[in-house]
Amino acid sequence: MIERSVGWDQRMPVSEVPFGGQHTSPRLPTSWVEQALIFVTVVLIPLQNNIPPVAGMSASFLLFGALAAYTVVSRPRVLGQIWLHPSFFAAYVFIGVSAFLEFSSPLSNYGGITRFAQMIGGAVCLAVLCRDRLALTVGLYGYIAAALWVSLYLFLTSYGAIQQMGGTANFQEATNVRESAFADSGLETNINSLAFTCTQGAVVAFAMAVVGSSRRFLLLGIAIFCLIAAFLPMSRGAAVISLVSFASILHACGTKHGTAIVFVAILSLGIYAIVPDAVWSRMAFSTDQSEDGKMEGRARIYTRALNRLPEYVVSGVGAGNYHNKWGFEKGFSKEHNGVAVVYGAHNSLFQITIYWGILGLLMFLLIVWNVYRSIPLQCARDELALALVGILVSLSLWLLTTHGFYEKSFACGLGLFVGARKWIWPTGVVSAVEGSRTSSPR
Image (cartoon, rainbow, N blue to C red):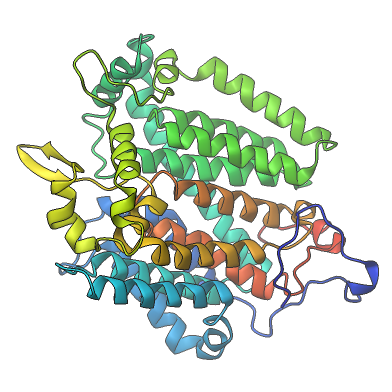
């Protein structure tokens, strides 16, 4: 396996490309059961908070439990080949270091570490299942399916309400519009995460439309629909993630790729024409105080985190200590329904540093670095590889907007990527042969 850090546009010498192309089929093709498990996992992750628990266990826990049981019982040899991938090994190191630092802090709480370990376990299982192009294609279409149902729901429940309220003068008015539009949505989940789900589906559809030889106009229509829906929750993070993710795909394709440029122009016109005016008023970000002396919530948290940096940067304060004592004392709390609650830092890198200091942050960045090093060369040759790059970029940016570094959405992206890197592109380069293949399920 080639593990090296290189640019997406670098070329591998012809002599280094294996005869007949770089694709190596696994000895054991994926079954329809495995493909179904991948698809169901990717589609149901956005629904995890809306499915009632069973015997006190959440839907995501049961789903990942089913993946683990199948993997251990049916694919133990494949598991033995994948579980020590550098990205997973770096995650194990992070778990060990963070657990040690948490143990040394007062009021220790291992909930976040446990959830992260469960997320990595789910990623390992998905990597075991994603052993060929058909399985990867099913997983990518799972992203599109999840985005489609969430987008449809957002359009049906909020588009009309937001459109009727017209334009807004400032950020606070737009926030009031958002709260009113989603007050009776019925979804027990973070609104920003819904926008992120739509963004990922749009990114996958766009990547497959740009490179794929068929269904490109259908996929482009899906990308436009999902991207517009991603703006309806008025999430600034989702807007930035969309912009950078689409730009990364365009960069990977190269500026000479006329189709990508035309598609980007169509997407931009569609967003500008259809997205309600009130959405744009909430895209601003400021650390200034309003007339009543209040600061925007996210800006307040970021400002406090930066001002308190010398107090936690060396060894952190511990997750349990942060949520039960230190966060209250240092101004990270806010009253919610009459009860003071410590809020997260809305940024995984900030949150990890607050918990476990610079050492914990470096161990986490080691995971990110190993994933980056595993990105195959010439990914723009293959619609599946390009879509995976879009997912990785979106997940990397999502880390900067959420403090939930253990969220299950990371398991899906990481698992599919590591599996594809191990089994589909084992030499670390996407050959021209791969780009000419059809990747639609047969």
